Length: 606
Image 1 (spheres, one colour):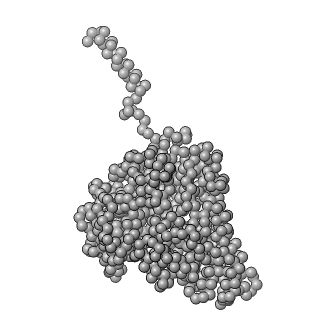
Image 2: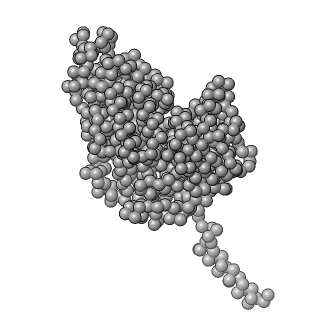
Image 3: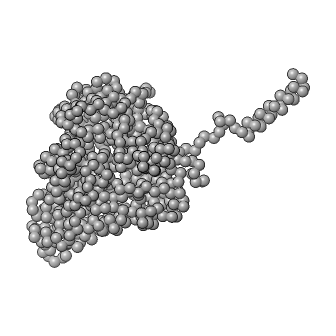
């Protein structure tokens, strides 16, 4: 190489080096910012083993870790069932007694030590094991009564034998759950179940699990969720923070939906996200913040992407006249305000010596307290107008809901309440301003509640209403998971809580009065043969006027005995930050995390 050639080469090398320094190649580009979706639960989780759960918030987490055979189209309204792990819709016999499901191939569980370093593909054996676990007494499933009600052939007998011998025989062949081949599972039912597919479409409780994982972790399985879903548990500080990250084994899943032609919001979301690989965010962080104010401030301070179900104390300033406040709209905050498929209620323990029982004076006490409760005041004051008075357990947006249906559940009549108490011997014998029981013993109602500000507002309404009729109430403050545990054991005298629908079917909410669900859904421990007969009959019927008539008759039985006082159906106010893309509340599905995105170009600068 002569000196001129060397000089040209040197100059070229320096130029390329400078160009590389000024214009980095794609390999040298800084990684894109991590997409983190953050929000808060108002109550603590209980754990993450699907069949053991009954609380909403734990089931939201498991719905995003596990997958069921089916799920819901995120944007379709009316709602639409779609395959998830299943390869197509089930083959359903004309009599609705046999459901045959084929599985997709290449669906793998998240990596875990239980698999000894090997990838574990989902097969029909995993599906069979998942559904058999509901019947294993060792699982202590809160869904056992519901699964027994489904009438899967042979499973009730297997459950009874396990109780007798002390061990559940998972490998015993059962006609009702048959593995036809590696990727085909078949369910056979004793009677027609036209809505059985809903049982196959709830990942929060029926997410597919692996036997190896359950057997490895045993009694601590609630702490070790291993599923096939878009996310996996990364860190967990009980009752404080739950962190989940993208599951690297998550199968290829691309955003597809069928939004209604007239649904402008859903259409816009789909136009923007169609075809993108899911999940769209890298991490989800859920904080447990029981008090409404810090939960709301975390959102206002850009620490959270979503405030789900805005605390109602802030509704007047956030949604005056049910429209987003101009100052928030100017920030680009996005509003989702929809009627929830839920119901709030309070119950009386039917086994309690003071509030329970079926004799006329006990029924009179419960009905009087129900009549004395002003649900309209609850809507107007603690709920800030973001609810409607409930007439029973049938929830809005479910198949049998009738907004014109009226019952005593929605009646406020303190004069009648006082007359009932007087008639049945609940009078103030000692002149202290409080009524005694007919036998002369003190009448004191122990009402279990939480300490947060929103509960204090609700409790104030309840106590004021009871004071007005001379019924003494003592508030028992504790933690929600503890209340739930004690309620199932029949240890609480009275408690108020809410119920959210997980399917479009109105029937499951009546399980709270079903005699075979005692201590599970039936927290009141209510028993009534006629109610049970109607409950079992309606569960076999297709949707329609005849079934609706049975459901209304069941409501009337609940009114007659009043084990529950249904109070309100809430309106949900959800707010998302300007950089959140694609959020839209689904009436029933809880596995929404994989469908939301973060526009990193709009993130606030730190």
